[in-house]
Structures are given as structure tokens and as C-alpha cells.
Length: 442
Ligand code: PLP
Image 1 (cartoon, rainbow, N blue to C red):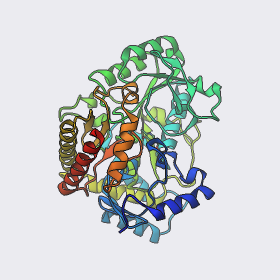
Image 2 (cartoon, rainbow, N blue to C red):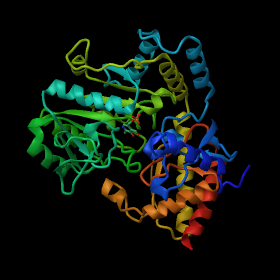
Image 3 (cartoon, rainbow, N blue to C red):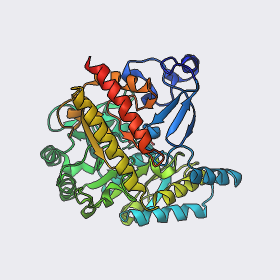
């Protein structure tokens, strides 16, 4: 093992990658730009809660590939399903029985899904729910919430201007201003702002889209009454409600945020969205997305209806079989209680360490996912998260990495526990954080 602070092979590979791959990475969130730059760590192998980089260093993984790897790396059930699928041929371009099995598993766990369709990513799933909502309502505009990430399709890469609501400006070059004008962004947890937006644009709005529990500016719970008010207001204006459950699906219990009741959380189950987008966990680590919802809305999709959506790779046997294996494993008793207990232990240890060293830290935790914000105010909106100290996060991120703890390189991303983590892993992480806080306090 080399000194973990020096990763010569990763640096060499990054240099090479930059010659061939734009920015050296195949998704910008993997770059270390937001945490001071330099070579990202090139991983060679993952097993359970750990991965090993190309220099031979071991890390405890809290990235979980930005969420899908809830069973840990190379879980034997998923590996077996993928191997069997590969042996049977990877792609047919025909329907398979596995798709029926998987669709009914999803429907059983999430009853608002009368009908589903499998696609290849969360981006595709969300993008299509918007198309279907537009086809169903005959309207063009979408209302979304600031800081909620819904993938990289044109319509949802638009963030808020200031004020309670505003016509969006594109977050990315290459998005026509005309498209950005079809998106209205309002602050999360702010029903008054939503009401203003709907009063002005409600009759043109096809859908209000939301992450029912936010996972993209930290983990943020909707305040009591927010989702209920959102659904009531949207429907009063004839707009559909789309839940983006790409992160939340099967994250906190065997179901989605919309079926998440009890346990001290608000009663989500009383409100049902019209359409839902899924991804991440449901593929067991292989590429997947799915969308679904009310029968009369979904029947607008081709070949039954005029809203076109298709995919050469969609419903591919490997992703579907990996997804079935993943969900079957998650359905076993005690899985979510374990994730919750581990994350709770981690939260308590991090909070105690930060307090002891006088480092301001707000932790938001929901089940097995948590987020750390270097600030002393609560995080209930994107604006709150923006005001947390990014430089401090960057320092913390690097101090943790140097001790073999792998977090996402962004102050907005969550930490995800997996069923492969142990109390010993969590305690090792707390001890590393304690040393990091001590260094930061100096
Ligand atoms: N929706 C949410 C809530 C997400 O967090 C993400 C990705 O992080 C997406 C959609 C896009 O999913 P994908 O990266 O699979 O395209």
C-alpha cells in the first residue's frame, strides 16, 4: 500500500484520461473541481462497504455510486443475477418475462404505479414524465423547486432566479432560452411561493415536479403539509404532480417516499402523485430508470397513445435481473432497520466530534442517508444549503479521503450507508472525522 495521501497511479491515469475523455471524467460530479481540484481517485475494485484504488489503498465507501449501491459492492445476489443474465445473452430487442416480474414488484411496492415503463437512466425517466404530462394536459410549463436535481435533460437544468418565483434561466449552455421559459422554479418548502407561481402560470402548467424528500442539496425533509399543499394546489389548477423518486425509491423502506408512513415521519402515504420517476437502486448498480403512474395518463404513451418514448436498451435483461435481485434482497426483514441504526450511530458520532472541536455542523439524516453542512443554521431549502461553508467541506472531504473515507466531492451530496457497512466501519469513520475536525479547528 502506498501513502494514501499520494496516489501516483490515479494521477497518471487522470492525466491520460484528460487527453481522451472530456475533463477526464464521464460525469462532472466525479471531478474534484468543487473540492479544490486535482486528480479524482481511480478505483480498481469494490467489495461490500469498501473499495480499493489503483494505488492499492482501501476506502470505506459512503458515495455508494451516488446512491444505487445500497447493498454494497458486488453483493452476491446481484452478481449472480448479472452473471446468469450475461450467460443468457445480454440484449434481445424483444420483451422478456423478467420485465413482467419486475414491473409487478414495483407496482406492488408503489401502488400509484398503475402502469410502468423501463428506461435506461433517471434522466430519461424524468424527461419522459414531463413529456407525458404535457401530452396529457396539452400544456407546456413545468414548475420545479430550486436545488432539486432531476437529471440533465433541457427542461430540468434550469434553476431559480431570486424571489418567490421566476421564469428560469438555463443552468447549462446549449439550452434554448425558449425552453427555459417553460420552467418556473420556486423554493422548496415554500407553499406561498408555489401559490404565487400557480396564480400566475397555473393555467399553462402541465406539472409540478418535486423530489418528495430532497437528496440533492443535502437530505431535506418536506415540512409537514408541504407535499399535501403542493398536490392540492397543483390539482386545483389542473396540473399533474410528478414525484422524482430516483434517489428516494427503495431508499428508506421497501417502497418510495410516497408510501413512507409512520416512523416519526409525516404521513406521505395520504398523497399520491400522478406520475413517478425511478432509477438508481432499482437497477442494483446497472443502468436503469423507470417511470409510471395513473393508467389514463400512462396510456398516452406509444404504442397506445401519441406520446413517443422508446429505447434500444430499455428493459434490458441484465439491468432488470440485477434490479429484481436487489429488490428481493432489500425485501428481507431488518434491512432498513440496520441502515437506519448505522446511520444514526454515524450521525451521533459526527455531531459529537464537531461539537467537541467547535466546528459548526448541521447534519440532516433520513434513514440510511445523511448530509453534512458546515454551518450553524438548519437546512430546509437550497438557499440554506448554498450558505453552508464550501471551503470547510472541501477541507473535510480531503482530510477524510486521506484517512481512507470516501465521500462525494460536493457539499450538496449525501452520504449513503449500505447493508455491507458494519458498526466497526462507522466507528472508524467517526474516529477519522474527529481527527479531521481537530485539524479544521486549528
Ligand atoms: N433525479 C434525481 C433526484 C437524481 O438525483 C438524479 C441523479 O442524481 C437523476 C434524476 C438523474 O438520474 P441519472 O443520473 O440516472 O440520469
